[in-house]
Length: 211
Image (tube, rainbow, N blue to C red; front, top):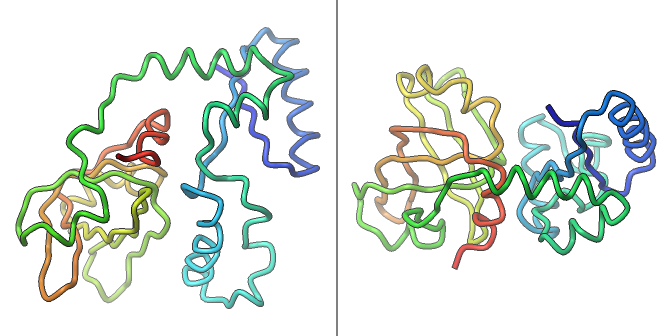
């Protein structure tokens, strides 16, 4: 068990973090530094705000506190995290220790930007951060996701059987690893999911730094 700390330059967050640190040290619970990433790069915050408005059926002008407070919830580099938690080296050490235990590779993952060049029906593996989940009442149980990696956004279609099998992951996980069949017809590109799994957040930097 760890006591999690996040820093996004918010006054109320600083007070909460101080209470967490004091309680964790009193109970001898190790600290860990994370970032609760909600988008890949700072400029993507505005896109997240747009999708938030769509999901909540409001405009940007009327969304108020539904919108992001700043652009700090992006995937940060190790150097950025080191600067942010320079006063808590033990929290950074825990983050590195947990990351070292992750056994994961993105070698076979296709980037969003490459999907349009692949033929219809090709089996693909994609990974990224979920920015929109939709399950319209008129869609007969189908679920639609918009997922982002560093190169762009791709759409995912999940049929009712696959959704029932992976429901908890689809509804609760932020980073997903998806295997499925590419649908590329008349310039409209999406992936019909056959398998959906949680992508370890320790691999988020790899999703963000595709080469």
